[in-house]
Length: 386
Image 1 (spheres, helix red, strand yellow):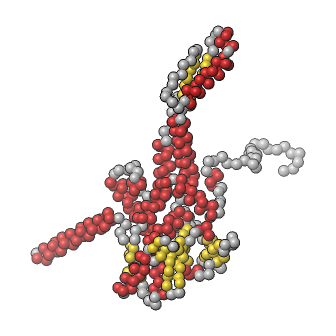
Image 2 (cartoon, rainbow, N blue to C red):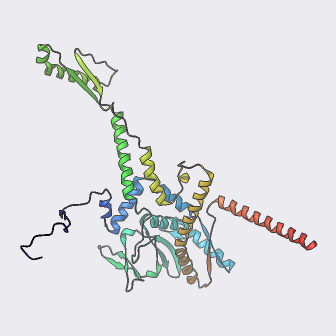
Image 3 (cartoon, helix red, strand yellow):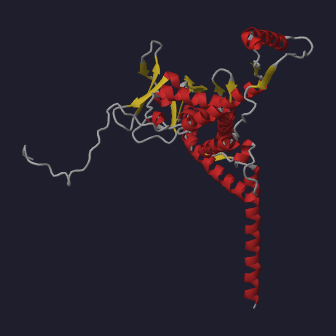
């Protein structure tokens, strides 16, 4: 547009300038912009488990419900040998049994999204299984995006690749594309947990104030001139006597004053806010994210048998998912043990049924199938006889 010509204001839209220092005031903005390192995220998730017991309880329940397993193979002697090894293998310096190793491994996986372990070998035998500390381990891509390099702290703050990567056990939970780290089961909960902790902290503060009562003692001078002239001195006397009465550790004493003295409990007119509904809303979000039915945690939100059965089915699928993640780790340990023994045979991991209720349902299903087959045979026999 040439200078000096009249601007066509009818076709020009209004434009509002926005300051470059303006920031969004959405309460979720700080968490959306948080991009901490993996080490910072680990500290955050560990703090959530410590601050909110229901998170720790849910993860512990999932680990215990994962259950135990046995190894099956073609040779009975080899099968007995490898199961005995798995029950008695050293874990760290204080424990024995692969179940202890897998419990710590799965706890690490759920909490931080990544779990790292190691098979400790001495010569031609496995001497121990070791759960690595994620703070002393660093993961990165190798020569290609399909290779993962596991590095450990050399003691001086620098991370160097491990010497025998084939002995490393590594699992990730729901990793992002092209990421070497997994996502914690607690991802998405910091905002909800922050609100819940604020409510809990406020409840504690309010009850502390309610239990430790504070008083407001008010002295009102009369219209008398002498009373007004000595109002300050009389107020000081009232304060001194009231202080002596409240600080006395002996028998209960009465406070006697002359004049218009008003004594009130500070905050007596206010009511403590009902926290049941907001606390339940936050706990529902946490439990939904963890995938644990409320009744397993002792929470009776739903008491119908139909809903409990559906929640049990959902929990079963969650546990099956964690078992599938653990299967490659178990196969790698068993495969190395058999190779060191000079044995080559295929192994099968047979997990136990998740609950006794599942075994009862399977037995009932087999019973009904047998009844159906019997009825079909009897019906078929009668038709043939005709």
